[in-house]
Image 1 (cartoon, rainbow, N blue to C red):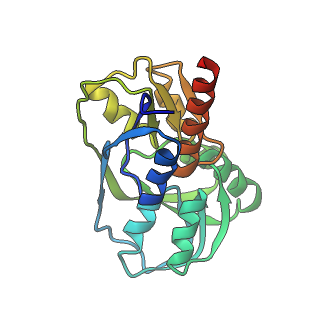
Image 2: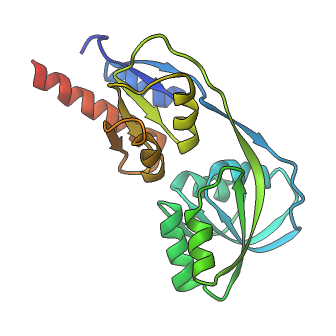
Length: 224
């Protein structure tokens, strides 16, 4: 494939994630489009039902001494981190809307504590409120933009959160790049700036990379 295709990742990748790109012959540039600040929040000692929609919230909460009976979360990676911290994960969903629907259908009489960031999406709290599911929110981390200007175009850009898209476009245009997005909410943000959007089959970093690899292999095959 040569090095004619270079991808920008808006998140620093692990060694195994980089291998997926390198083995496919894709060049890449990486940086962290956002910075996460974990807050020292006053978390209750005992929580019956906790909602987590990101790994950042898990990291923030388990910096403190708290006992949680049941966890409800978004994404396999969040689930794995909760279990690594010895937590019982009762329900997992692909996205916040799906998790809200599960809570409404199966746990409507329960009360929840939603651990979230300062830029949390509205879907889950709005659905719970509309369906009279009792919950409280606690902000346990803050997301900060870490903007950086790039003086070159990229064939593809990997996006992992709506705030990552917002940070990138502060100083750059997506232009003709293909935006590979980790999920629908990230894709919705990217679609404000481009029509060239591909969404991962699963909300994992690896699957975002796999979509890019597949796309550029097919694209180059069709050119030859």
